[in-house]
Structures are given as structure tokens and as C-alpha cells.
Image 1: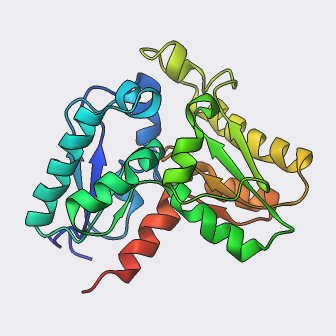
Image 2: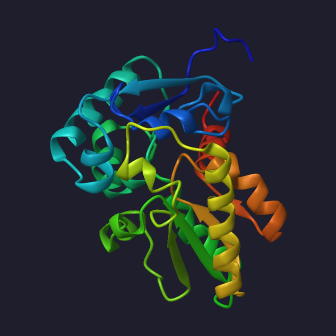
Length: 238
């Protein structure tokens, strides 16, 4: 792949300077949605004014949604063939973005959950690991096409001491190694509590750097933002 290749997937990102210090650290990890080294194909990043932890994750803002639609259209005019976002909570806007932009839009790794449920069958469970369970509402699940919840287990990271600093002390650094241990630890804790889990889906786009360790320790499939974007990219016309 040449660095001069034209991007085929556009990524709607939070406004520059709006990410907590801890998330900026996590963005430096390969596998993070906003790290260009996470992809073996060219992508186009678009920083959306007003998009941040408050207007996307905590209180979805329709004004920011309108800006996202316009940004998506601009990228399409530039030649982008599909659009995604840098936060899994944008699932709440899946319908509006896909109908408004005019090319395939995949807002969140949560879109994979119905497929994973079908693949596993009714006797195996799916575990979602999310940045903040309290913010992941039934509306997000419904918008992502998730209708079966009886075999779904949702685990949030907000009670992990290091991860919670993203929300509680956003201007301070994280211990990234401690975050890794917390993320993997939550996955293994979920598996101990629910032995019928057959796969994990990582909602947060900051979590793919830890997916391989979860796969290795759980011996289970792990689906995340990277598995989704690679799937979509492989389907695009060349």
C-alpha cells in the first residue's frame, strides 16, 4: 500500500483538543481507532466541531449529529466509499448517519452483536465490554439492531480505578499498563461469572489494543472496531 493511496473509509472523530488526557495516551496505541498505524489501508480522519465525551457519550447532541452528517458528505465528495466513527456510542445515530450521508455507515462495533449472536446460537452468550455501562442505554442497543438481550451481558469499565480517571480527572495521565490489566481483568471476570459466554464485543474504540490478550486468555473470539472496519473495507469496490 502506498501512503499516497486515496482513503476509502472516512472516520468521524472528536474535535481536536476535546479528548481527556488519558484518551490521548490510549490513542497512541496501535489498534486505537484514531491511530493511522491501526490500518493496513488509508483512512481519512475528520475532526467534528463540538464532538466530545459529553456530546457523544453522555448526552448525544443532535447539533453535533448534523455536523457529522455534513462532514460525512464532504468526505464522500472527496472519494470516501464508507464512513465510520471513533466512538461506539455513536450507535445511537446509526440510522440518521446512514440515511444522511449516502454511503455505507458503520457507527459502532455494536453492529456486530446480532451477527455474533446468530453465529453462536441460543446456548452461548455474548459479552459487551463498554467504556461506561451507565451511558449505554437500551436506545443504543436498539439503534445497533440488537433485539435479543436475554443472552447478553454488559460490563462497564467505569468502576476500574485507572480507567475511571478518564472521567474523574480528565487532565491527568493514566497508567496505560494498569488500564490494560483492568480491561483484560474485566473480561476474565465476566467469563467466570458467565461461563456460557462464547464471544466478546468491545464497544469502545480505545479497547482494540487489548483484544489480542483477551483472545489469548479467554480462548474466545473478540470482535471490536478493528474487526468491523476491516470487514467493511474488504467489501468495498476497488
